[in-house]
Length: 122
Image (tube, rainbow, N blue to C red; front, side):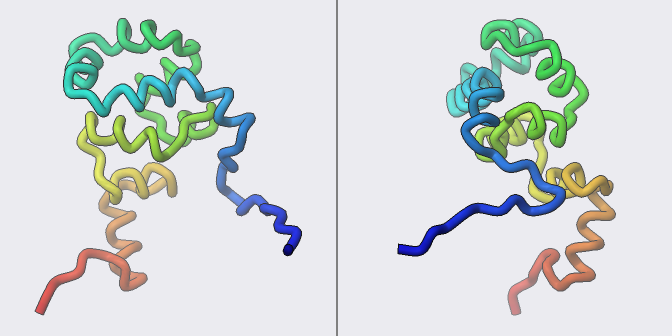
């Protein structure tokens, strides 16, 4: 058996047990968005919904600011945050732009320049 050791990728946040523990309440809240009633409750009163899940003020502020990178840094799981992205209408180009410090348009142009943008059939 090979001794496999994960090495962090420069510029990324390694989501491990410590990060999962830090972000537990936030990720639990994001998981709740699988339910339409939960999504509507969040949209109706985000502050009350964040309080319901006992989010820290730091998490609350990052969410108010829609600061994806800060949410990741605080322990947010990108997999659970996909539920949050849907609430805000963020697609992968929006998220990619946020994570790379680009506007959505700049990120799409980057993808296009790399041959990874939108494809067409035919």
